[in-house]
Image (cartoon, rainbow, N blue to C red; front, side):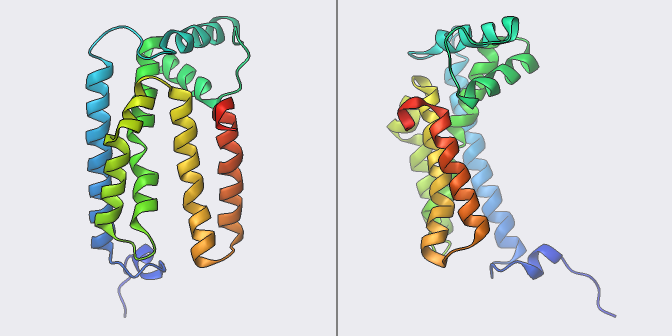
Amino acid sequence: MEKPGNVLCETHHNPATCKDRFQTCLYVGILFALSLVLRLLVLFDTPFAHGADGYYYAAQIKYLLTKGYFFSPDASPLLYLMAGMARLTGDIITGNKLVIALLGAALVFPGYLLGRGRDRSLQRGLLTGALLVAGSIGAHFTFDYVKNLAGILVFLFFLVPLMGLLEEGLSRRRAAAAALLFALTFLTHKLMA
């Protein structure tokens, strides 16, 4: 009688072993965690809001939480995410800083997925992810233009299924994911359109 193995590892189309997948997730997770911690250290170095629009976001969130609408019309889903985090933490500035740090650190995920390429190179993926989170663009948008950062993040995630479509051909799942992420890119910030 055969003993049951790990179904995910046996049925997945990727020839990598479970150990390889675990190692990949571990390395990408470490890179994400390191980026998150460094961003949090910078953001929480001061009790004040960061960036060119720091207090704009705080005022928008305060209006949404107290009155149920924004004082200035804004359709960005980022503001709702910030409002949810403000409710969880009990403080608007703290909630905003946590969301900002998470968004900036999350650049590692599409960076890894885009960088690894068709041959699924772990090193190239990690390098691309590290360059995105440590590069000046990631830092600049993390601390100054958060809605643009959200748009860049979603756009990079859009490129992942798009590359899959170009490399491996049409699939409904990839096409639907690409279309959804492309539409979401436009909602993050009016400049992303």
